[in-house]
Every structure is written in C-alpha cells, then in structure tokens.
Length: 302
Image (spheres, helix red, strand yellow):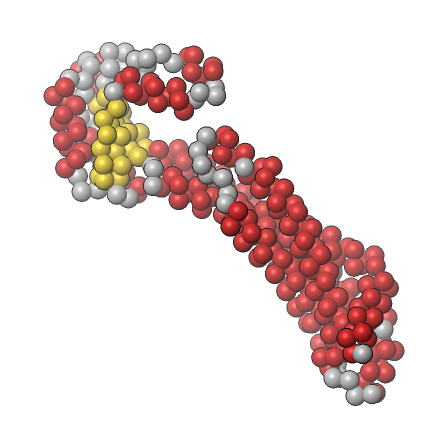
C-alpha cells in the first residue's frame, strides 16, 4: 500500500506540474550534455597526450645542397664525419632514450605515407627536399631544450625541431574548448538546480492538503518527502538519458573524426565513453534529488 501511495503521489505531481517538469528535464539534459561534452573532450585530450607523449621526438635536420639556412650555405652539405659527431653527441646524453638516423630517401618515403590522403602536398614535395635527420626519443619530453642546446649550431646541422611545440598549440586549443564547455555546463547546472527547486516547491504547495493529512495521521518526515524526492530523481534520470544520446552522438559523429584527421589510433575508447555517460547520469539524479531535498527542508517541515 505504501509503495502504491508513493507511486500515485509521484504521478499526481508529474501531471500537475507537467510543463515545469518538462522544462526541468530539458534544462538538465542540456546541462548534462554540455558537461558530458566537456568530459569527453577531457578524456580525448588525455588519451591523445598519452599517445603522443610516448612518441614525441626531437628531430635534428642535417644540411643538404639545397638547404636555405645561412649556416648550411656557408658550410655546405653535411659530411659523414659531421653526421657521426652529431650522432655520438646525442647518444652520449643521459636525457636521450634512442637515436635513429633517417636518410633522405627514408624521410621522403615517410612523408609520402603520412600525407597519402593529401595529393597536393604529396605532389609538391620531391625526393631530396626533405633533409636527412636524426630522430631523437627523449626520456622526458620536457628535456627538449637541454638536448637541443647540445647540437644547435653544430657543424652540418641545419635546424632542430621539437614535435611537442606544435602539439602544445593544438592541446592548448582543446583545453580551452574543454574548460569553456565545462564552465557553461556548470552555469546550466546551477540554473537547473534553481528550476528544480521551484518545481518541487510548486508541487509541494499544490499538495499541501495531502501532506497536512499525512502529518495528522503520523507519517514520518521521510515518508512525506519521498514522493517529491523521487519526482526530482526521475526528472534527473530522464534528462541524463537524453543527454547520453547527445554524448554518444558527439563521440561517433565528432570525436571519431579525430582519428581520420590524424591517421593515428587516437579515437576515444568505449570505456571512456561509458565513464562519461555514467558520471552524467549519476550527476543528473544527484542534482535533482539534492535540490529537491534542500527545497523540501523549508516547505515540508514536520
């Protein structure tokens, strides 16, 4: 009987405040969709950082006949002795994990494979345009400056490039999008909490006669509040489910494109997606339940 009474009270509350309930669900759904989007971007950035941190390298480009730098114009093409000296210097540094020498032919082949989907870029570069180089894997990507100083300006060296400098700009953009989405989502969640409290307040006021009778017959404070708390939880759960649909769509139709753009296995894992959905659903239910409870403490005191 008690369960039936609670369910009937929930149905009455939802039906009497249908418009406000729908508004709560939509607001919660939008808020959680933004929050989940921010978490998705956060997960994507973390996964990409983990992938690239283990692959970020320092590249030492050697002088060629057609190198445009002033140093190469003065010294000419790098000799075997100069290449050997640079390689020896790099391998002697404790910050260096591995050194690989890449010939001009190998560098050109690698370039063609990386940009096979970009015909304009592939056609514009000829073999010999990309200099031979040393690819240096660091023990810690942050040690770039210390290693670069040891080979910059050395005979036969045209330039030193760090992959991380390019990636940091991209990650900075993603971090900005992430924090922007999370900031907007928290503002929306605050608005949703206020709307939930107002809806529960109206529901409690419209049923003040029923709650008054329940007080007279000795119903406990929790038993009186339970229907209102469940109303909020149900609204939060429905909003979370709707938001989950947007989150899944964002993952498959937006973030999965990242792997196509970069041609590297950096797509967000299913486990990360389920984590974001789970957090969003739990947050939606807790937000509505807590907002309902705080409102009821004032309007349904026993």
